[in-house]
Image (tube, rainbow, N blue to C red; front, side, top):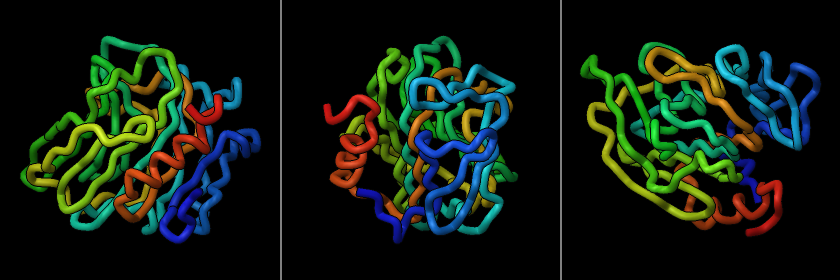
Length: 211
């Protein structure tokens, strides 16, 4: 069940129109696909030249003083370097990514003028299997979500006050390389989605059915 009242971006690989990826939420933050290919019911991203951008609207602005959740279905076996999954553009950008060892991390440029990084997960995501992952922000804390369960919670030190409304998917930036692998459902909420709702989404969106 998708909470349409609080969903500000919903991209589904079931509805891809060439290079156009329509947003199924009521905010219409439609995506434009560059270089990615639809394979096996998911979008395949091969590196620097394949990504999606969408938004540029206030509904996608990330305000760390409020609640926010990013959820993505992914499959990857790439290792040895960080991988960008979703990022906000603008000066105070947030990067929702995988670490060099394949675990959830969040990277951001804080109001103190410094880059920060926090671990948000303990599960290896780059094992070649499907995972529904998420980053939940509430009261300056970030919690990693993997396959229907909570993982690690950490406090955001000197968080950026906000990011602009432009979101890029799988596109690398700076020291965080582009994502290599498959991306399926992608949802962004303007609330801290409950773990129970995340579990239900995991069961509904897995390309292999309920686990």
